[in-house]
Length: 112
Image (tube, rainbow, N blue to C red; front, side, top):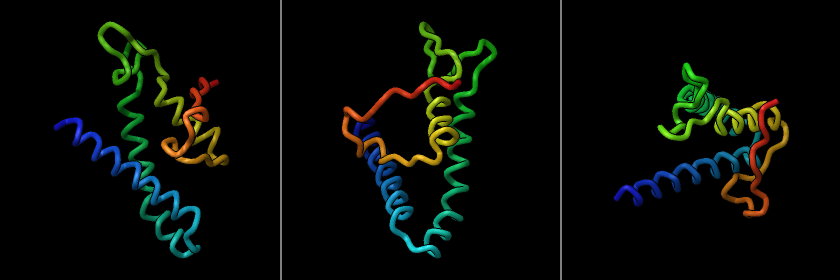
């Protein structure tokens, strides 16, 4: 049951991202403005929530990415990906990850 629910959730999220990408690429200016006003606050709040969960703990590890036996030093891949997409790559749009061919997927570069 968990696998089915997980797949339904993943599909719904990918579909929503696809719809937003399509709107960004094809919508007229008034429609795009309306979407931006409604979706940008939701997306930024989502990023904030996700990044807060991945903030370093008192030992400098990411509590979400670490396991009991394998600590993951901060900044974790979630923070590095956020930096890549929101700061360094903000002006270079790329196709959604699930739409890129496997050979085009690459590791996220470390934050300088």
